[in-house]
Length: 336
Image (cartoon, rainbow, N blue to C red; front, top):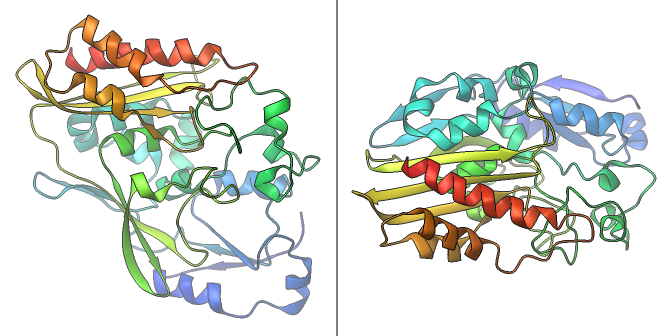
């Protein structure tokens, strides 16, 4: 690990100023990735530094900024929480548990209790892919400026099954799957002020930008995450499949949010995680449910529709059936 300067930001504006201020020439010469990086919980950043993928001159710590760890719920405004809210904070929130079931379930199935206590939601959304070729210093893949995707020709059993032409890595955040299903938004703050990006536009697919996962600018940080209010007729569920039941990275996860009129579906969101380089809405499957009484037959039709267009790789064809079964189960679980 190379030496770097560590600074704590007392405010959002101070953090932005620290991104613009000069770093010592000696440290800047040792930096191989960027002049600075920011950290909240640091659970992913520590891995990136140890793996040699990030070697900054300055590390800016956001963890002491007041107000960024607040969570609030209002029946009219919905759910809002800052980037320093931990996964455990969502898991332990009665408002999240009561009103946003899919988000609550995604939080309870993420990582381990120890990591959930440390990992922040800002960092969770901004974390880098866990593709072993990307994380390997021995492989200069496309995401690191190379010309070869080693996952396409090598071990790819945990990689994507949609949009796999450029880079089949999958987005590692299972909570993003649920957040997208609730039509969440992210507030970004930078030198030009604040802007809000819907989560559907926040993540960048490998086809859009192979080296970057989000639209966040290099000097922007997440300052708020927002979900719209849900009514009493909203039903939701989240299911995850991993190699181990206790904790593991997701092989496949599905979030379903249904707006019901009695036993008939008025509107639907079905989102896949660990299927593509971004959390992936399956709008064709949603259309199957709209205006219909949700039965097992209809749920199965929607599940099959959700897998149309899949392009699995050599070693991950099993994911097609896995996602199909998870989708049917999640739909039926949501409607009870």
